[in-house]
Image 1 (cartoon, rainbow, N blue to C red):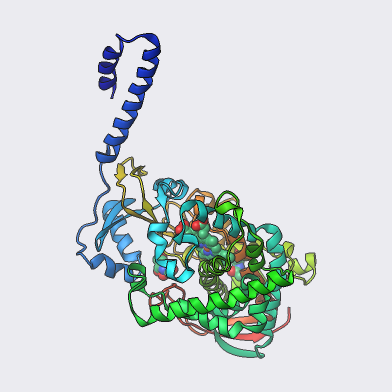
Image 2 (tube, rainbow, N blue to C red):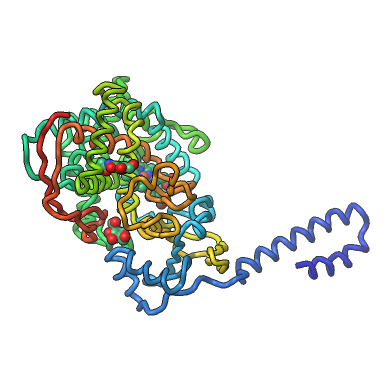
Length: 494
Ligand code: HEM
Ligand SMILES: *[C@@H]1O[C@H](CO)[C@@H](O)[C@H](O)[C@H]1NC(C)=O
Ligand SMILES: *[C@@H]1O[C@H](CO)[C@@H](O)[C@H](O)[C@H]1NC(C)=O
């Protein structure tokens, strides 16, 4: 570049001063443009190593069994950055904190979500999230955020408690349950109350739960690559989606007409307005339905699975269990038996146990972006690569949480790693169960409060005994949680 501009400056030397200023900026401009072009067409630095030995569809098949094996091999042979050809695409993995900042921090114009997540469009619906451009999506995410602020969460806590208490009051003095099923049911009820609203929870629950189930079933591995493939589960998904629109349109119209307001996320969306796009209008009924479905998809299975893993680990270790029970006693002494927002927020021991379950078993195994621009990464050993534009780029909470340079003895269930002085989660981009940076989970506090509310009710009223060993993860399902595990409960009073 220096050579080019010095040649040009010889030429510029003969020009009059005002022209010089102009030409000067022209040179600078030209240098920038050429530099930009050179950079994008011939990126300086080499591309990440390609993981060898994966035949054309091999990558696809390996993915279907969870990413662990593939990542273990790639990380072992290539290091922190490597590319896997998957079908006709290139997927570049970034493993560990050193190579992760750009992935999590960059804006959507560089690291984009819509190209990799747009298979959700037929489920969420038109006009929301991955079906709209980035400006509109950003405002919709802002609406999510505003529906989940601290003040809003305070209003949802009584609903968390009430649902948990009602649910477990139906249990007998002893019995055998499977945590995964139990919490899936309970979290659906709670989501109905806090997100979808009173009308759905009290009058339409069975019907709406069935329709949502139809949406769930319409998400099969094929849907990720061909979301519109003409297969029966997709037809059913589309029918269910349409009926959900009709149900919510009615509810929204009723609320708008009657002027009656409720304490739920639905109400937040009804009241929300765009700020800098679409003329500042309110959300349409169709958009509200879509956003509610998107929030449910982000928060429901992730929360119920984390609730289940937390309980499995706690119940498997008597020492851990007793200490959490002690904490409940201390909290009751301090706040009374009411599970207030403040009481739940003060449960540090339980909090760390949940975090540790999430570290060992993050329900979202991979988070992905699409590289709209090439970018450089440097590994911890000083190797530099340029990831080309057009790559799918992925980070893996499941794999990264097992790096011994971030988490001491990573396979061990050890909640104290989250406590001072260790606080291993504070290393940037080490603990990514909720993502990080620009698109970090908006529902994190909602999730912790809900899971703590459920476990507080259980710790105060039951003892548990695992009748099977702590189960492995079940990769047969689309959202990955624990395999079946029989747990015996016995009622008691604290
Ligand atoms: C234990 C439970 C949960 C886990 C493990 C979890 C995990 C995650 C992760 C990893 C991301 C980042 C995805 C990415 O970077 O591509 C994310 C984003 C998100 N989560 Fe959660 N989540 C949980 C609960 C919830 C709940 C309860 C809600 C809503 C009530 C929610 C709403 C969202 C939303 C709206 C985003 C998108 C943020 C954005 O893209 O800017 N999540 N979550
Ligand atoms: C939770 O974590 C703490 C460490 O902070 C541990 O000592 C305790 O036994 C755990 N309790 C449960 C219920 O797992
Ligand atoms: C993630 O990683 C571990 C390896 O430590 C594996 O055994 C585990 O089951 C994986 N998957 C899930 C869903 O937790």
